[in-house]
Image (tube, rainbow, N blue to C red):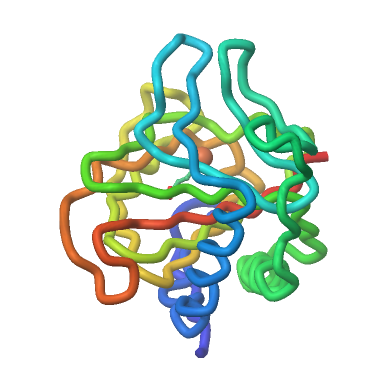
Length: 205
Ligand code: SIN
Ligand code: FE2
């Protein structure tokens, strides 16, 4: 599909529908990864439990617990290395980053988020990576409202609908912009049912 980048912010673009043609295969792969590294709701350092269920693939995976947020090479739940990142996923992330103006992106981690109705992700910056390479985000299933702010937590938020197959890339001046996901509205999606998946590709080192 031809890619017409939609400007989001300085250094941030949306490629509408860029992953749609790959959705069925990628969702099957998510389910395969989740057999090896199950979706789990992680504990935050503050003692809460996240409403989003997460798993990871790639050389490192993100985790949160009472000790804080970090990337680890072994899944703390299984004691095994995270499942490998499918080569086609890596290729899609690299192509999307390039279309957004970021050549040479080499993701070493993919965080897979599973949202059920009501699940949300509070406003945050992605800052657990040591690299300032961009983040590439791929959405499947139920639509969500992506809250996009600024580099200060108090900056005004825009509400951007993200639909099945949409890809967002943020780097450069947008790399540390605060963002989040509003509580997911209930619905039935033809491919994922009552669920939204989001994959974020990152360079952690
Ligand atoms: C994230 O901010 O890491 C994920 C956002 C999303 O689920 O779209
Ligand atoms: Fe994030």
